[in-house]
Image 1 (tube, rainbow, N blue to C red):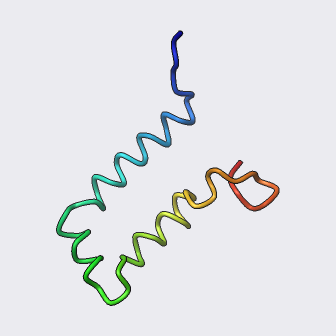
Image 2: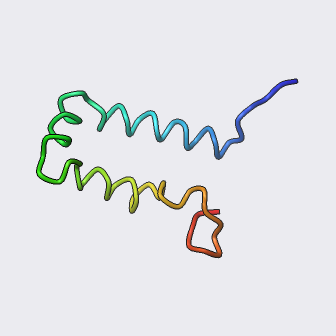
Length: 66
């Protein structure tokens, strides 16, 4: 049996890899954890608004990306 990613899955994978490479440096993560909120608001905004990952597993009829 051969499993392969779809073109859409490959795009998501590549985007996630690039995003994590840019935003996932240990020093940046530690600074976010040690901040008063415990996370980096700009990073979460990018994840939700720009990349749309918060709705990736939800159907479109409930506001997800399908």
